[in-house]
Length: 144
Image 1 (spheres, rainbow, N blue to C red):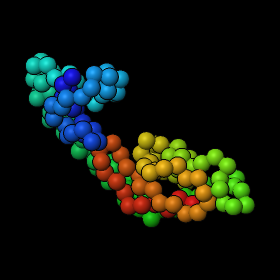
Image 2 (cartoon, rainbow, N blue to C red):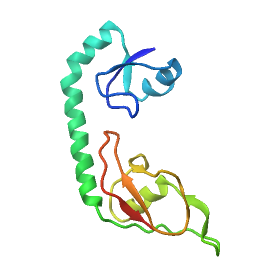
Image 3 (tube, rainbow, N blue to C red):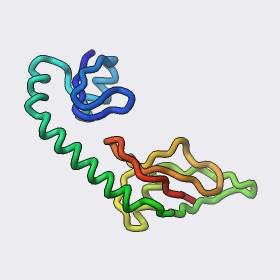
């Protein structure tokens, strides 16, 4: 199924690209989230008309992400969890926990904006990079 991307989608393409994806991916993710439209002649023409608005929205999102990155640069957040004597956590620290810790310190950040490679399952300091949908990331913020 061919779709036209309305914003950058990781590992798929940039805004305005016409890409071929599996129908389920388009039907269950791209189309409901407003990230793409089916690549019909009418939708391509409508995209060309809306391109300036979409680029302005992406530029605004980029500025917001850069401002957030500047505020979070070098910040440290402490997440308290119970752990065993060996240092293994009972449970784990997820992006939601990291976002909650940042929110408790006065920052406005959503769990979707926190990029963890894997959940944290042991004691210690970890670094995470808050990112946004538009591929902009801050420097790493220690999370302990």
